Structure formats: structure tokens, C-alpha cells
Length: 211
Image (tube, rainbow, N blue to C red; front, side, top):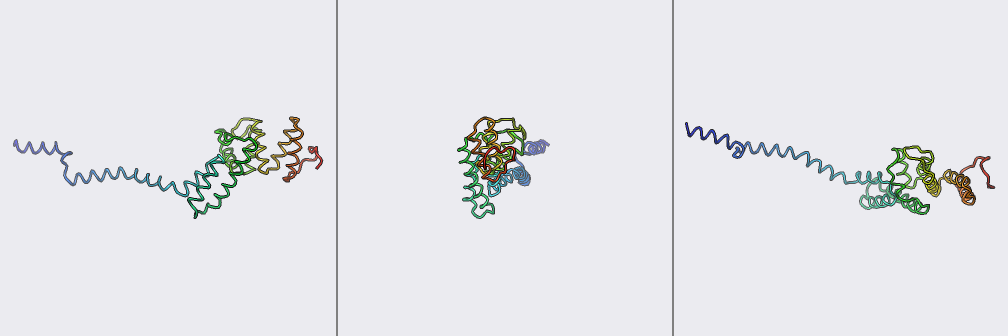
């Protein structure tokens, strides 16, 4: 009886520490099943660093200098990608936007603002890629106080200058009218002529210049 009790007690005491090979196999299998989701997630993250993830990173960027850098790297790393030619175009547009922004005094913080709704954010990203129409919409947003941003005539002027340099005719005309109201006649005349050269047709009663 004493020997049998000792054996029974040993089975209870050693049930975990001295488990049978079958029990140990079952425990190890459960541990592998717990680790499996983590391992799978790691694989997904590794795969996500490829072509598609890099392209998404490029699409989300708003700084012209960073866009140019990412686009150039994308073209080098993925020469067979269907997006390679588009990356080249993005690089060229961002480099132009960067140069013109510097020329008109549009600092990088203007592209990094956290204000604005989704439409405004999309326009900022477009402007950073050298899209004149997107830059003009940003200028209008600051003039009207729409799209989730406050009214800022200073930023309105800077974005008009930027859009005008990108080739937006209406932006140049609006800038000319702004300078007219401020008495900056020479600058107004310059941008009126530029607007016309870009194809803008001034309203007859508003045109005060001889074209």
C-alpha cells in the first residue's frame, strides 16, 4: 500500500516535469502553433518592403526633395517595375518643384503642414510633384479658408507665385490682381503679361494693360 501510494504521488508530482514523450510532443506542438502567427507576420512585413511598399511610401511623401530621392532609388532598385517610367516622371517633377519653391521662397514647412482635410493633403502631394493645378488649389484654399485650413494671405501669395512659376495661367492673373490692390504696379504688370502668355484671357473690363 505504501509503495503504491508513493507511485501514485510520484505520478501527480511529476506529471509536468516528468511528462511522457507523447505529452512533451503535444506541448511543443502547441508552442509552435502559438509562434506561427508571429512568424507569418514577420514574413509579411519582409515581403512588404518590396516594390509595392516602396511605391506606397513614394506616393505618401509630400516633400519635393524626398520625393525626388525616393523616386530615384525606386528606379535603381526596381528596373523591371511597371512603375519605373512613372518614377522617372515623379523625380523630374519633384526636382522642378523643389527648384521653383526655393526661387519663390516657399519653404519646406509649407508642404509639411498638418492642417487640412484629405483633399487638401492630396493637393499638397500633387504640388510637391510639380502639378500646377494642385498648387493653385492650395493657394485658393488659403484665400478662402476652406479644405480645413485657415485664411492666410501670405501663404496664398506664396502658393500663387509657385503655381504661376509651374505654368498656371490663372494663378499668375490672380497674383497680378493681388499686387494691383497692394499698389505694386510693376509686379502686377509682369504677372498680367505672364498670365496672357500662358493662355489666360482676361475679362475685358478688368484688363488695364495694353496687350
